[in-house]
Length: 150
Image 1: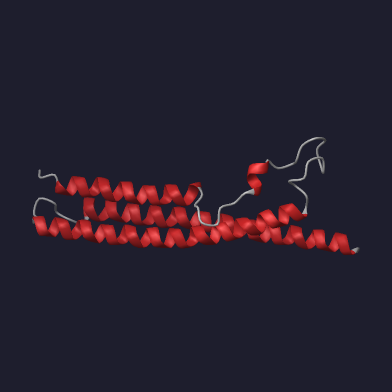
Image 2 (image 1 turned 30 degrees about the horizontal axis):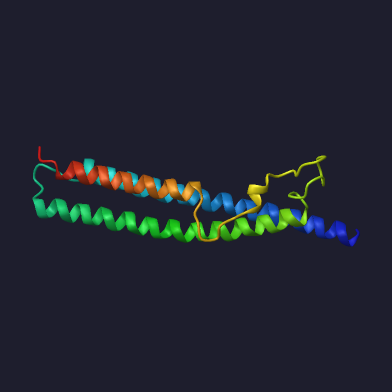
């Protein structure tokens, strides 16, 4: 095996492994938000008699739900930073394989769009943003419903 061929095989192996990790962490972000959101809905719907709950009790429940949503947001933000690091590794491997170089594979254009070469290590991508939005929307909706007196 030539040195270039060995490097290419290693790059493909790294790419495959890192892509698997990215998918795992995206899935984990969704699962955290769904678990917390459904827990909020389940407790407020089936676990509490809202008619017998006092106003301080309602506020305590809303506060507890806020803590759960905040903890989920923290976990998702940590996972998002890891996802960005992993995406950076993927971009470096794809640069090595010349997937952004015009004419390397397709005449007059690159195989990947140039926008894929940029990654924001501070920013978040679509999955974590929507995971956090799901928890926030669930918390807000349930909180409003708890405060409405029947």
